[in-house]
Image (spheres, rainbow, N blue to C red):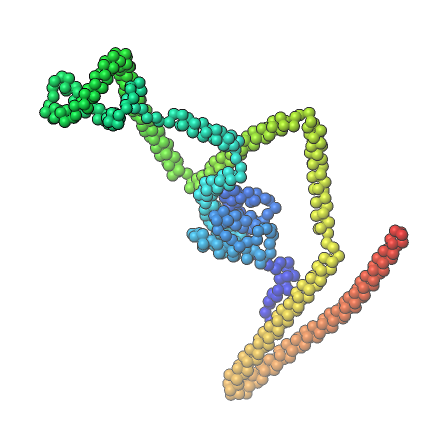
Amino acid sequence: MHNYKSPTTLLSQGVPQGSVETREDEEQSVKLAEILELLLAAGYFRARIKGLSPFDKVVGGMTWCITTCNFDIDVDLLFQENSTIGQKIALTEKIVSVLPRMKCPHRLEPHQIQGLDFIHIFPVVQWLVKKAIETREEMGDYVRSYSISQFQKTHAFPEDEEFELRKERAISTVVNVCEVYAPQRRYKRQVDAGELLDEESRVHSTLLEFGRIKALMTGMAAMATEELSASTVGQIVGLQSEEIKQIATEYAEKAERSVEDRPERFGPAQQHRRQLTSLNKQITQKTKELEDVKHSHTHTTYCTQTEKLERELSSLEDMESQTDSGLLEKLRALVAMNENLKHQEQTFRSHCREEMTRLQQNIEELKLEYGEEGDEKKVDSLYSVLLCCPLQARRNREIAILQRKIDEVPSRAELTQYQKRFIELYSQVSATHKETKQFFTLYNTLDDKKVYLEKEVNLLNSIHDHFQQAMASSGSKEQFLRQMEQIVEGIKQSRMKMEKKRQENKMRRDQLNDEYLELLDKQRLYFKTVKDFKEECRKNEMLLSKLRAKGAS
């Protein structure tokens, strides 16, 4: 007979169902440590928890990286540690299905994650961490600007509120200044000149305001020096005599007035204007020279800094070429995380300072509004309430601890439900075990039958092959008969052994049947005892309730 190990034998040897073999060699441990370091460097600090299993740490880190890269994954919102094998398989299949959509260059199978094959998991985790850091750098400015815009919709800084208050006054002031200093038209005609009565004089005065005065004055100057051209004479003759007289009179009066006012009005003023123009030109020239010097200095400084940076960059590139690429990537990730933490710290400090300033202003306003003497009782009561808060929190924690301890103790209904479930599972396992055992017994029986039939066929073939040769002579015939007797004797001995074994199995079956009947009697007695005990408990509860009712009355 062949030796086979049934599932019952495996269970009896202590091999749990659903267990998975894992390679716990040194290389796997090193890869697990590197994976946890990458997750911590990326910001997944849940990997530090010592109570979690390596599967929960690695799967949680991969899920966190995938969600950080803005990819959806169908997992439970409330993560559950120490999941069953079915839950682990479903979770790993969902993670593996998302990786092709992320264009991950590395292949990974669900059984590799479930079997904790960290050698194949490490490249995928390394790529996910790099992708998560790149996504966070790309979305950092957008998220920051979005948060600032959301903050500015509902909140404002004290400086902004003060600016809004000053803005209205500033606008009104600017409008008033613009109205006061608005451009006003100034006429060339003097204010103290006589009023023009006739319409023709007003028309000529208006024409002189719009540029005709220049041509007329040029003609008058030429006439005064007696250097008149033919066109000038024709133009002057073309004018009417009365108009010429009137214009000549006005020109003579203006010439006399300008001769009288010129030394007083245009002497020092003209000289001052020339000096001012010269100084302005010098200032413009010096400013231009200063800008040229600044530009050359800036260009020189820029060239020097550029050369220095190029030298430093070349030295860094040499160092980078000599350094391990994996270590360098890890250092870059750590430096990026350090800069991010510094920026967050600075932002938090500035926010704390602003919050402290705002709270101090609120305190000062409240002091001015209500006064300090009237709020002493309120402050004392608030202080007493604050003193009571830690006590209340401690009481709440104690109550929560006791509540959890109470919840940990199963009730009678839960115990009954657990018992029923265990009985159902035991019945199911027993039926499966019995069926499997029957299959193994049937297989072993059929295999034995096959072996014996093969032996019988071989024996008959041997007899058939040697029968004619044995019948050829009397000596060979007697030898053949002796061999046949030996074969028959061996068959009888085998039959006796099998019969003996059958009797032993029958006796063992009868013995086990007797033990089974005894156990059934004990089970019936146990059920009867439990039923009687429940009845007595019910009677006891009824008597106790009646006793309490009498005591209350």
